[in-house]
Length: 312
Ligand SMILES: [Zn+2]
Image (cartoon, rainbow, N blue to C red; front, side):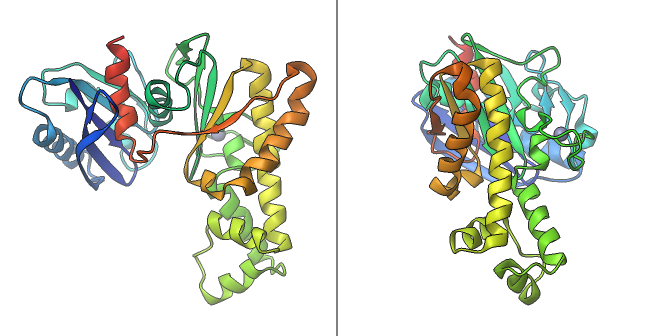
């Protein structure tokens, strides 16, 4: 049997046919239409086009940003230009007579890791996606945590400093307001606007609006003191937040995904140190930090995992 995996992101919509082994056999992608009606037409068209018509399609799995009700596929909260879709059922947008499963994109990533990746066989695990924002998902005692309204697992919105910067969610001092590509870039802009002596300031003078999170990590690795301070502060907050989560969930492993993990040891080594000293007193063990193993970065494979996982 095969599943159709759909990833609905803020910039791209991706659809692919996935085998039970987790292999993508065909895929397509397009820019996310900003008009809700055009979005619905585009999604239905892509799904219809890609769906196997030979009776081998077991279902459609959808990963979507925001808060998605897994039971009903209802879009509860969808920040950004597609906000008018809030309240819609994703299953209503799929023109096929097969089961439709939908969940938040980070939860979908953990579903993929549970079937084919780093969370295989684990009963207690936490996943964080470290990108523009911070997504999260939790499996506890073998069960996916979704909560009453599908909000459970939004680890980017754990408060790490009650007096911190305002977050997209309206709270002050969420993890995501300290550690995320957006937060690290904001901090870098604050430094260059203040005229701090840094290679980032030189780069900004030559070409404004181009400082990225990757630039900060690269400048820090090259010995830039300001960039290193920004990087290290962000990692300290992430480590403190994860240490708190270790005390709450006592997981077998923490799984990291998202583009910032490409920083490699410059992120992972100080992060592991921060987590260890903050949690060793009660846990008495080191919790492994694993990287996401499902190689597909499109979200298609994880979305398909919703279908295969529900088959049992
Ligand atoms: Zn928040």
